[in-house]
Length: 265
Image (cartoon, rainbow, N blue to C red):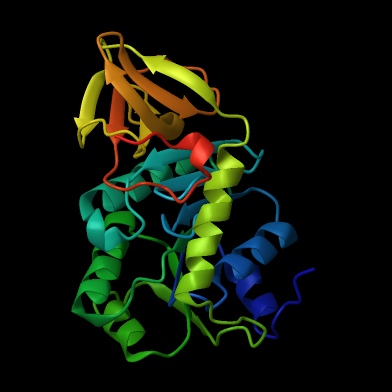
């Protein structure tokens, strides 16, 4: 059960349109988003953290429509610093898809990459690209003030981090990614991706993470690259969503998974 903080009631009553949740890692953004969605109907949720994803496997960004449908975009990286353009374009495409269905509120749960000049610049550019109606800023780090400075016309709600939130170690974050990958792969089977499907990203390397995309870049399925041969590329992945495969995009990392999913080069 989520225990609301004293200021949350006032914030939730004022929210409308696109709402950007800004804050460092482990400040309670996702907890707040879940509570808001539970208090109101017609809320779409965008998961903007490819490293600690809650809707799809790590390396993806996600959109949950108010009716529960989930759509994914592929970044192929755990941090926006390693896939800036893929992250910015992916979040924008998710927002467009959410707004097209007319929800009362779209919550954009941003990643915690706010530190240093790189983090400040990334968050500023994300806000520029999304043009949110409101921002909920959690915490009072100097970086948050720097991020918000160019946007004086946007309504900002400032709230402190939830006291119950605990900062996770790097080891806990790695374990979370491993658990998310394992859960994603529970129903995985072997898929042969034919040579008519274009290859983008990195070369198909056994053991690396990859996504099968439709012509608009939406993830049909994602999994682990096996052998590449005359018939195409073998992908161990859950059954794909309906749609015609157009591209296979390969990431430059190997997921932390049990050996049965991985094949050595």
